[in-house]
Image 1 (cartoon, rainbow, N blue to C red):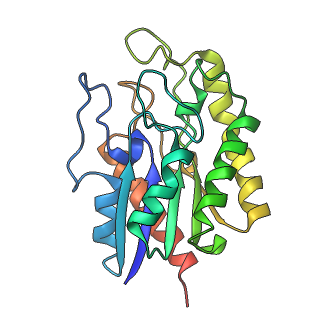
Image 2 (image 1 turned 120 degrees about the horizontal axis):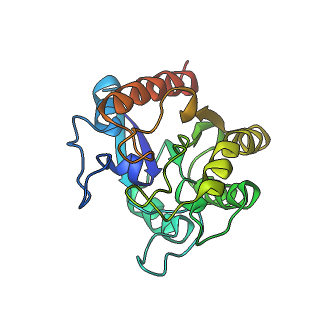
Length: 209
């Protein structure tokens, strides 16, 4: 059975949109759990964490630097046959002041680390869903601003170019699903179902033959 690491942030963890304090969808409703049911031939290894970035340290929440903890997780979960990586949304927060190109450099460093354990052609790079236009409002997530929304919109093209250059598979989550209006940031139950199906199809392409 192929072992697939799913590495991401709160949309991989399964945060329920608008929940305060944060609550999590059950495994049956998270895209990782749905994907496991769709693909019993694969072992889906869920590694999602709220606030995780590609390379940035969160001064208020330690352990969110995705690159820093990735070597430990790869060692912990080996052997691995493939990976799905979807990071970048939290990098758009105003505190990091990162452009789409800087975020792209961060995700590429994560890919380089993954490639120490997994062939590049067995890695699926996913550009994240878009932030909703009102995500920055006080009742939603003021860690973002209007510029964050623009940067998030540009990640698809940046990630696609990286995937082509590094010979990894690519999927744009924003082609299939949108953030729920409750917080303009996270997938709802229907979004998790749709996204899981898109990933299942993409993994079939990777593992065909």
